[in-house]
Image 1 (cartoon, helix red, strand yellow):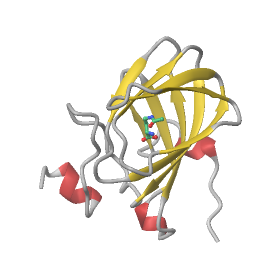
Image 2 (cartoon, rainbow, N blue to C red):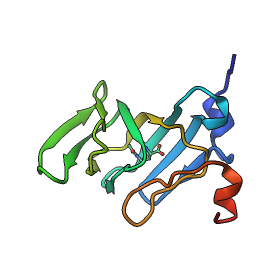
Image 3 (cartoon, helix red, strand yellow):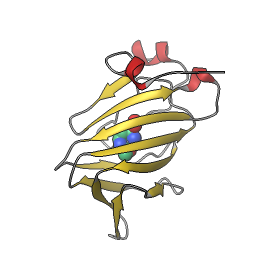
Image 4 (cartoon, rainbow, N blue to C red):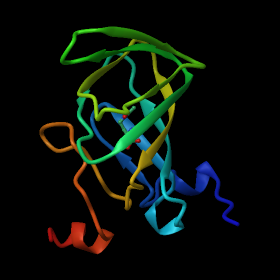
Length: 136
Ligand code: 9YT
């Protein structure tokens, strides 16, 4: 069994931050669960365009309020504590946080660890963490 606390992730390799968000990665590929599990903070007043072409992601909001907009259709969904959205079609989307949002995120396939968005809001496919670090 794996037991891990958020406080162990904060400030470690398991925390990956960008301008608009900070992702604390509780479970990763080498935990062999078939998914990764993150506790992610989205900064208030930000909008982030994302397109996880290589992953499926489910996002469960446990704190805060905002919207998610589908880029193709323009459809907008209100997101608040107790709402989940699942990007089952690798949906291109924009997440806007009205207040600070705290999200529980699940990725399939599991993230390896250090993934961050490229210029198109995509996470790369990674086999190993060392491949990422050497640029391979
Ligand atoms: C909600 C969302 O997708 N935020 C971006 C960060 C990402 N989910 C992560 O790596 O935790």
